[in-house]
Length: 379
Ligand SMILES: *Cc1c(COP(=O)(O)O)cnc(C)c1O
Image (tube, rainbow, N blue to C red; front, top):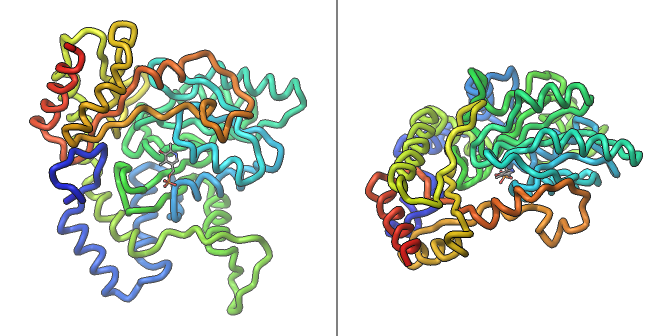
């Protein structure tokens, strides 16, 4: 069910009867606030799914980024490497610690952090006396970043990785799931993500000290004594038990959710096959995407302004689509940041369009979208 049943949304959540029952059961159990058995179980089930030993449920992916960076020692004046193509929250979290996002361009095939440019950014920062205290590769639209290259490169440079897997739940590299590659990984359960608790996030790690510190900070840094005792600054960042119940229920069908998203992407590929100058982003050589959003890319030499014209035409048919993330270096709020760019992000932004990809998309809806794309390109 969605607010407008006639509209095709970019990525609307599906709530099943089972989801509703799970939340009601949690409410009836009396565990309303804030922690409780569903939160503990959601954490261990998610850790098991992703393949880490620890998970901490938090109020958002942004909160998970913030506390993950804090644990890694990111502090005022440091640089943190961020791909310029991502949701702004990746970089916002860096600024919460007084640190400076250093924007690097992305690999043209996947839109994920360009490893060579990122390493070059570390060297340049060090030459100018700067400290790079972390790197945040992003699994863009569910596409795993190139961890086979990034992990050893940053190990050599002694820069820890915080993995922004907010869009990547269920994606993998080889037999390892996204979220397990850095010192810690971040998930988001926001409204349109692949699993949603309406709002929420999680930090994943194999480091028990990291998990303990983040869980404590997220609970107002309360010390384990009967009165409220605080030795450190705290945050109110914990995920609620009720929302965890919703997350647990959705986690049970995550494999089906990811298969469906991948099927939708395949339908788009088939529906647009033979149309020159249009490509649907596929899997990458090193891993499997969860196809959170299907991304179309247009040859704008051949079809000038195609993404925007198609977006408007889809909108006139009550179909939601969205330009790819506007690169952070083009954002007014980030104009002053240091960057290392080679034009790939700008190119992606001018050519790309995210197509409706959610659970309610069936073959007929995908064909409707493809027909509209064909008709716009024909005129
Ligand atoms: C959604 C998202 C976030 C933020 O997660 P919230 O749960 O909305 O705070 C961070 N990074 C990326 C790449 C995202 O897509």
